[in-house]
Length: 396
Image (cartoon, rainbow, N blue to C red; front, side):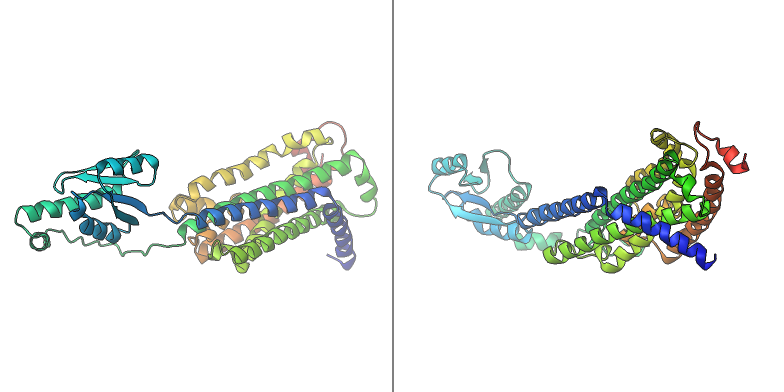
């Protein structure tokens, strides 16, 4: 392409970029997304801060006080936070349970106690209490718990697995949450800015501005400038949202995972660019077939179906991002921008899979540019009834 051609594309792209940046959709949309992210992080922070469990208050009467040491020991060993106290008698303890100042009252006898609760008995408390009762019964029968434990110590089965053990990822839930968020943001951004391209094409055609523009520049230059300009607006908006998210995450320390690092945000921007080029080019081609804004949705519906399918497939990929189905669909060009980003966020995408997905979508974009350019050139000046796709391809 000559220097003059690049200059024309630059001017068209700058015109589109200025138009998008000066619109309310960009400002309000960006602010709204940042506010929603801030609200979500705040809710997660508050929920995380208030999730510390409170101690379960357990009262023992004088008849069951001998169970206290064993109960406390087993409950603590099981990780259950309990607060043990003595009550005067069963009537006083029952009154405390009714009033809500006591969660469990243990009364009766050490070998056959009764747990009085207001609603249900916590399973961990019930287990610890059962063990304490078992020790009391063994002691009453003349058996020490230590001797019984020694006799039962060998009654276990060793399991030998041929598959190597994979360590649990403590950040797995955070990665999955980030993957879902990334998928939604990419889907929304690609759909939004792709529709901007389609609407811009039809708007210029309907107002016949395109006839004036094509008097001085070629259709391919106009199409390229439009896609580049609108795409840059999308990249800028996502960059602002990504930067705001990083700041909020660093300030709140709500998560600390690679899926929300500066490097990962840059990778997601690359996938947005690839996804936008893929869908925006296709949108521009089919949108040039119609002359009214009312017909844009029906013209672009077949393309939009693939974008919806990519988002729907997230529900399959997220539960099993390393599976065969997830791997295959994430490599296919129509789905790769969203699904490969999901698998990269979870850490399940390998380098060769990412590389193959990029190669395939770049080749597809190149083919779409040629195809959409031909459709656009042959149909952009046709007004009135919707042009047929085959006629646009043949130049009739």
